[in-house]
Picture 1 (cartoon, helix red, strand yellow):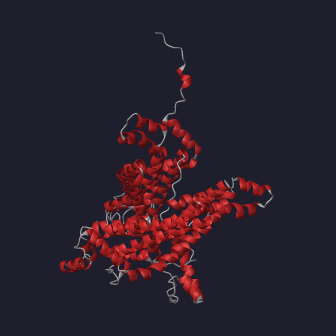
Picture 2 (cartoon, one colour):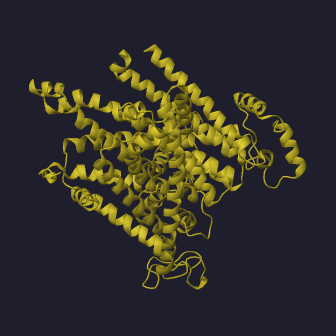
Length: 335
Length: 295
């Protein structure tokens, strides 16, 4: 168990170094003149020169990487051209919104996906099973940015059921900043009005984002549950007269969900990427909106900062999934 | 010498033509048939779009801007008065050719890496696989976005960016296949008679990796169309006035609440095409019984 744990952490560390190396290559090697890119398109020659000196871009590449790493450890990601603030401060401001959206979508995809998966395994080849198949095929084929627009047309424009644009009703002020997640902060400060509004504003973007993963999770749950239900121990459980509901929930589901955990970890990366597109549609003030502005301003430091941060988050999530795996599957623990 | 009276036809397996295999495949799944039809229609549109577009897809016509769908303009017109149907039809070849270019590049590179890693094993395998890990450590869209932004916004750079993000999947797939056939008897036999490694790989191992690779490529047409459209949507892929579906949705987004057809129509084209390739790819995968790649 401890060995496994150390191995996973070691592999993650290697991946981490790889992530910094790749981002370094993107920011220092690929562009013809990184100093000009970092200084911005309107910069004069003298400014470019000073950026070149400041970032050590006139030194040999291995040395540049060391400088880059030591900057990174101090949280120095350079200055953003669009906000004229350090990129690291921008990321701290914009990240919670993305985290809230991605977590909400993950939760929806997992709960909804597992529920649909169980239903379609139990009612194999009935209408609910066909429905999940359609959802999952549609989910992986639909462009998430387009789904968002269609849902806005239906639920905001036509029906008027849900609000659209931003994280909160404009007449309300954001809850006291504790975690930066509006729902959590409203709960912690018992601010019910803000809580209601932030949930209402979260529904459409979260559903949009969750849709494709929900399909994938439900198909995985269905397949895995159908496999597990073939096992001998399930027959034993049924044979001793256990209610079908108990067989399903207590005996089959536990084992069936093990492969689903891995899928959820991998899906998180897709959700994080998808969040960027969903944010643009819903004017959600997160990393995606920030990256979009950075792209328009050719704010190079901003783009690189966002990339590094999402790579890091994705890596941590996958490490957590691996660790969950170790705790829930005794067979792996015993190895 | 007299001929031996042996009925050879009895010893031969029934002949399987491509047509009968295809018929068998389609009979098993109506969804596969639907997928195949969509794919054929899309390819035909892509090849003939130059002649079948009712209006010029690029020249503005400000007299009819933002016109609702009607008999003159079946899917309406956009903010420059261009016929949306014509732009969607013209965009088909942009999306399909983009997908093919991306898949060709990433397959060629991924296959080379996968063959080397799988066949050589040892430290080289380790190094190459850790390399793919690094690329897979980022969410695909975000890495593609960063690369595309570094190279500068254009369709060509977006294609390079997506290919850079995509090749590791092929490398892993091919490596897995190589590992599963590397120690089979016929490969050992080839080695035993003195075939050089390059010949063993190209003649005996490579052909056995092609089936799963083709299935993956079919599924990836859909995936790469989505990814390229997403890059165009955030302004990094095709630039206006190129009729590219993602960029059409992106520009049309500003008109969503008053002129809903402008951003929604091109999205249907993406959904339709991607769904077609996914249906076909799924059916091919079941047919070839390839193990599902965890995405």
